[in-house]
Image (cartoon, rainbow, N blue to C red):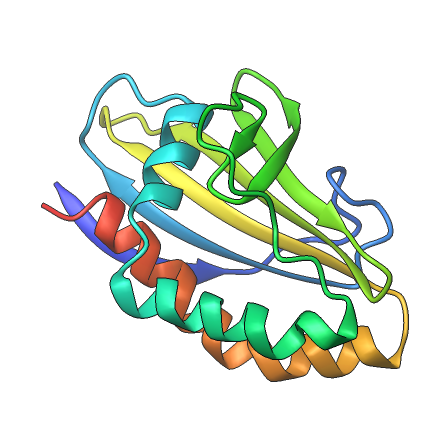
Length: 159
């Protein structure tokens, strides 16, 4: 059984980024067995649709003059998933993220087993904005983010 990604609320403060002032969460449910947070994070990050890759390349090009970090691209580094460094690992979650002058960002992948032997995968984004640029940046990218995260979850765990 696969359901498309759905959105849910996030309670702040979040332990992954206690100073976060913005957060959201998307969840997908799957019948796939043996999913760990790291496996889920890698599968999600490797499932970026082509339009997402192109959009991120455009973002990096446009934002480069402002000194915005674009993430790390090191497929051989086990402490990097996709373009994000691993900050912490636990049995039911993994935290990826970057800190920058304008904002700190965390992507938290949490795994939850349901009583009916399904697995819920939660992709939580938490952000701590530092200044007006961080606020403006987040306001600009939020509509894209709201399409990108579900698209990546659906691509990773489609039937």
